[in-house]
Image (cartoon, rainbow, N blue to C red):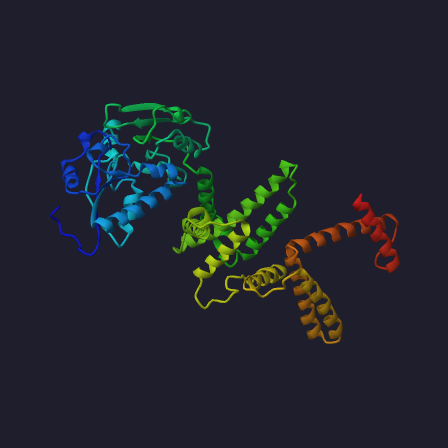
Length: 487
């Protein structure tokens, strides 16, 4: 313990107990352990845990925490408190402190502690020996089993997967690859470096049925037929290929693609409106339109990637991190009572992310369709208290604005302004009644078109010229069309 340290920060000495058997715990580790009175273990469920005598273990946290992240955050917080209380403490973890130890990474990231890491043997050393491979020559990818579906995206092997401590982890790994055409061989490595060491050679489809899987288990995947997340990976590569080889795609820019982005978004809306809850076949159109919209996102990301500005990974990371920040009731300690409180928290968090002097309307896209723009602006104003308390006030405003339209007749500019105010008032009523104005007007237009198509068909059947018919004839045809479509 002779190395120098900062006197103004509490010290945490972190040691690794090796992969299992006490024979793999180094003499240097034992020396560090002996130099501390206040000792802490991440888990006592380790064959070498008894070497840290009189230690406080955190195994109970795994029983009470909702997620592993919650468990690790609690451990780190307690260790910080104990280090401040005692001045210096020992923290012992399985394996090596720098291999898949989230608590160690979190402690190192804190600026209020002095953290000293002491080298140790990890399970990796024993795994390479048991498998008989050189991980550098073989270009092995190391994966955390808890994050396999994302961390292994695009990888076909070889992979060594840690944190495969339970059958459900192995099951999640198995389900991350949806190719049923092959069943590659894998090896489950159990209790390496102990008397219970086993290497179970099995197949992808059977690996989650291996018994005696525990915290000393890892998984060796020499090769899989298709990469993890292969569907999206193929789609991503297709976008690149088209951008490089198709003359039309090569010419496009972010700006030139705007009309297609808007068109695809509206086609998704149409497909949603056409969904039939009782007919699964109606999903087909929505699947296709969502794919077209997703391609627009990929197209923009591919253009940016070629320009060296950003990639689709930056896009997904940004939205992932934003959603985590905006859901503290899911990923943090915030408690909410219903969806309304979730929405209120969302808006509050958005405001904290903006510049201090930002407008209430910052972030509202000016390119929104007019009805949606009016609805969005009104909602923003309502959130700071500028709103009718009940819908009755908004309804009365429609009558007031209609009268002003009548009064403005004869002045084209004034009429235009007053009609705009009237439409704005109608949107306000829709908002108070929980009606989305854009889709409501679209539904009304669709209903009008269908009825008028019937009017047109009736007129043709009867030899009636709509253009020269009087209003009385048209009203009669309209009423008949309403009756027919109501049946």
